[in-house]
Amino acid sequence: MAETILVVDDDLDILELLKMNLEPEGYNVRTASDGESAVQSACADPPDLILLDVMMPHKNGFEVIEELKDIEETKNVPVILVTARGQTEDKIRGLDTGADDYITKPFDLREVTARVEAVLGRTRPIKYINPLMRAMGEGFSEEGLEQLAGHLQAAAAIQKKLLPEQPPHFDEFDIATLLQSSTSVSGDFYDFIPLSETRVGIVLGDVKGSGIPAALLMVMIRTALRLLCHEEDAPASILKRVNDLVVRDTEADLFATMIYGILDISTATFTYSNGGHCYPFYCRNTRTAEVLKTDGMLIGAFEEAKFTTGTCLLEPGEILLFYTDGITETEAGDSQASNGNQSVSTSLNGSTSFSEQNDGHQDAILTDMFYGGDRLAACLSKNASLSASGLCEAIVNDLARFSGSTQTRDDRALIVIKRDV
Image (cartoon, rainbow, N blue to C red):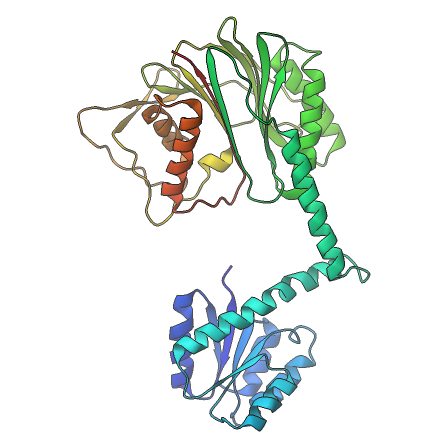
């Protein structure tokens, strides 16, 4: 959210000049033309910073600062004095009164921007830490916050250790994973659970929410799965029992989506069930990507949840792609990635499929606000010849091109399973 600056000056030309300079830098700018209206504006909606002229009629800048410092809602708002006076005593008086910095008229607009950013850079931690400390009680302190930060780092380290260090290795299969967390701890997770010499349980989940609550539910679900998958064979039955556990022991607004399936390397089959999660993609040798649809409800949201089981056969060269919505809900940047030479068709069962075109014709570029499943399927089809890890990298690069950033606002997870040719 953009920070707000209240500019106070009785010269309307200066007000307009400062506003025109600061708004292109990303700040919201409000103005006041005298000291009294400045106090009223600051009290009604405290800004993040005040640029305050000293010499004003009725109430000067020093008096405005003194009044604001006596009001609980505005006492911590930083103030930069703007004055035509260059005398040392005026600068000292301003700083003694509570100003954070000063600028002398006539000023360079670049200096104004630099000083605004410098003051905000010093006061942002105070703005956010103080309310947190008040919410956590009078006994909490900055040392307590440092301790909390240490606990968060420890939680992130523990969670990282719970994830498999590397995917399982099978002679006929190439498996790769990706996890990108938007915070120190993540709600997205994956797991590989050995069931026998030829069978492995595969999990990809997304706990709705972020931070520690989501991470704790992730650990709870992972633990339950590892126990239950040795007691039940059918993926639908396992998700049903996990749902019963979660819905009983958690709040209604904390739930998860999940894919659980069993890869049998002796038959090259994948048997799976879906708990309200993004439909996986199945890329055939024809480079046509289809969705694997099975019915299933959110994990932990409803007591009477039902799940169904599906099975697919992986021929040599074919690919399974599992992902969380942090992939498909990536927002578009200023320059969006092209869809390449792909055509989109709808199969008889209602699933969307994508195939490469070699005639040099380029269809209309997808310009949706979000990356979406269509674009992900297109990227899968285009890069189907790559290894599993190469495909993960191709998707990450395509996301970066689409969003214009390598950073993520949501957790992202991928599992790619490719049967060797």
